[in-house]
Length: 136
Length: 390
Image 1 (cartoon, rainbow over the protein chains, first blue to last red):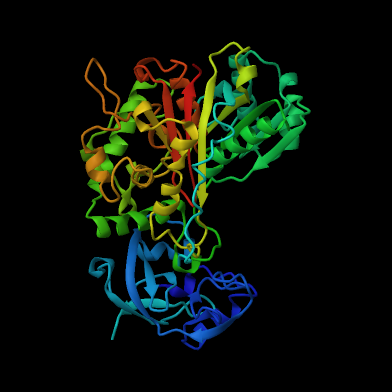
Image 2 (tube, one colour; image 1 turned 180 degrees about the vertical axis):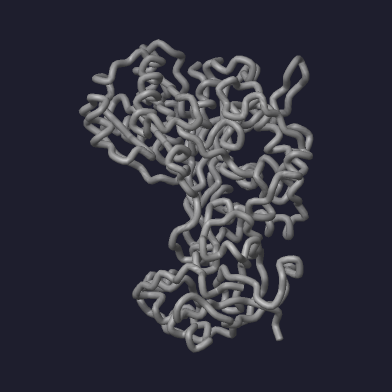
């Protein structure tokens, strides 16, 4: 793994809290206060109401593998040593999808529908990237 | 993360006001390949001149201009000496070929312009355009490129419906077969087999090289006007009978978790808008940036049940007959499409549909083609039907 050379996240006014929480090894999501539903990526309003009525909540960090791919093509210089690398689409228990990577397992072990849990093994600069592996 | 709202129900009880009112009167395409000696302006001019010659029109008779993948509409109009009363530049993604077509139809119908030139020019190959990389929501995880989005969706489709990577093979093989019938196609003279499709090098698994479109330099131009005016011009008019569109932007920036099935299904209203159904259509143009989009399109528009596209395409359904052999019921992307002609982002596929309806297609002509349907599966799902003028 070379998470240290990954592309750095693009920080904006909406996702800053998400990345700050990752540094504390917490996965947070915005939750619409009217509907109780979570959404991601972070934004200024709830997509369920269009209104700025939401709160940050700490997610369970658990979800299921919805789909995955394995990259053979190099798009990022900082990831060339990881090729071929998997990208997993994880459906979080709270509803939203995250695109992430597998940690502690290989793509050959990936089974759609399997339970996964978040971990924070490293990242570029002072960021920690959420990764997912088998549920403990 | 789909919201609870479903796509708007199309108003099928009302006749579509634009039915058969707008026509294609000129088509121009350039050669496709690697042309560092020119650029998207030069290629666009070449295509537009071919379309003007086809229609028998002069630049001064163009009073509307829509450009796509050409950096500046002002510069392009300056170069061609066109001072229109309607002009715009549309967004880069290929879904905007159909969007541009609809905008032109609306502009003509409303009187904003009488004769509109639509010009697409792309020099992505010679400038080594990368469809992937760069900063995005998902770049820290290495997720990038349109191909990966389709790979993610096809992996899920295989899980949900029991389809396979091999199910995509007949799509790639059919379109390559068509390219071999089209002397202008980039992959002319290079036939492939199902075994070649299976053995191609992986790009983003489950997709492999022969599931990906071809990045080339080239340009396409269409000239559209009213059906009434079209009847006074030199080529047989090809009419826009129906157009339907449904957007779905709720995927949370992730690959669509429903294969765009709901919004594609909503565009089945295209038949009501055109006033005739599938039985009266002889061939298809399907936006094939990657082979799975063909499957999503066929399922979404109801050519087969959801999940059954693998069975549907298996026995040459999409392939033209040759040498007296009977072809499939739905010859699709007869120029070779994005997979084997060139990736002209829908512009070339729609041009091919028009050509089929003017008997311009030579060895790849669909016998007795009276109507053609175009489908584009993305978060802006679209379908349109073109037919010969009666």
